[in-house]
Amino acid sequence: MQHLPPDFGREVREIAWSAAWHAANKLSNNAPEASKCTAGLDAAVAAAQALLVQREPPLSTQTLDDIRGMAVSAGWHTAHTRFPSASGGVMCGLDCTVADMTSAEAAKAQFDSHAAFLACSREISPKLATHLKWLCWNAAWCAANARKGYQAAAAKDKARFERRLRMSMGRLLRGVTLGGWLVLERTLCAAAFLGLREQDVPDEYSLCLKLSEKERAKHVTDWRETWVTRSDMEEIRSAGFNSVRIPFGFWIVEGIEQYGVERGPLVGPGMEYIDRCLAWAQELGLFVVLELRGAPGGENSDASCGRFNESWDPSSWNVEATVQIVRAVADKYRNARAVVGFSVLGLPSAEIPVQTLVKYYSDAYNAVRGAGMVPQAVTVHFAVPHRRRVQDFLALGFPPRDMQDITLDLTRTLLPDDYRQISTLAQVKRDAQEGAAAALAEI
Image (cartoon, rainbow, N blue to C red; front, side, top):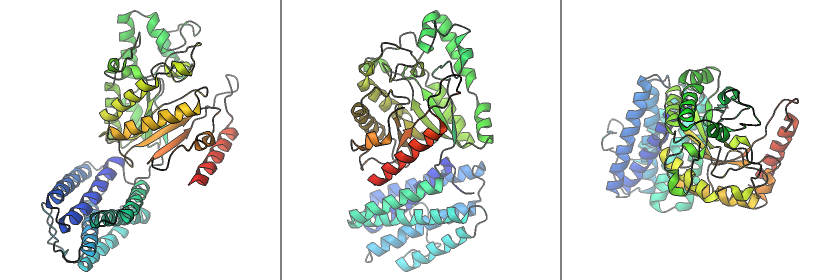
């Protein structure tokens, strides 16, 4: 195994983090917090064991024991190092008296032993074993340094911990967009438009307007029920992909009326379809990136946001309501194990001033994080519009250095020459390389 599956990886993260903070809290005389960490460790170990029973991932309990052993012994080593006059070495709930954890030296010996066994495992790669070793080590030093008051050192340890977590989970996404499902687009799902002429019905909005209330409710519901199924997700996984992106329009979100937004003829709410897809993804070990593709008022004039609107301009977009909807979605899915990314605006028009996008992206980022989607669990995606460059955002100081776990999505559309050529592959590569070079220069 080269990387940890997302659900198992999150339990490993909790094991390392809870074990580290248990020992640091225990030896710094913070017993109530130590007990909370023990409960968190117990729960994470139990959840990881349950995943092993399901053979997802196909690992032995010995491998899990070594990971837990590394986490626990690293925690006690660093805690004893920072608080040498304190005594301890027994975990409440998960008893560590079977191994000597009563001194920094003894705990370090146990850590080295577990790490050596893991390095020799035939179940995981040597590189993954190394990442897990340093994951536990950095978590332990972060907790011990923080409890000792060495906040600068703790911050560096946490950054190292998060880096190892990313590397152990292999969050390089190779995926498929589930387009034409929760936002109907002719270029992706012509059959959904019932043979009606494009000039008459170019988008989902006009399609729903064309049908009676009863007809559109039945048609759109039937489409959502059948366009993406579990068998599609299984096929995606069997093809070697590890993720899916789910574009959705604001109209499927519950409670949008409180933000002063109306659906009009569009059919909603419909969050149960995302719920169902997330359940399939978790069962199949797939990552999910949510994408708001269709903001209130529209983020562009194209049918890709649900409504083709020739009179659209940037002032049509209801920015404030979009932030509120992003916050609501983030709150709903903050604990969804499969969700690893949230694109807060799918296809913004290049006509929107960069300053406006920067302000929105900053507010949307704070909304996502404030709702409980934390860094290293969920990446926040910011789309760079067509005809815009990464450098346009960097020139305005965006993203700021205090934003964690983010991406700038350089989205380019490749379509056949006989339809419309928006970008050539060479242009896509050039833009990506130039944008990456400019971003690295800012670090």
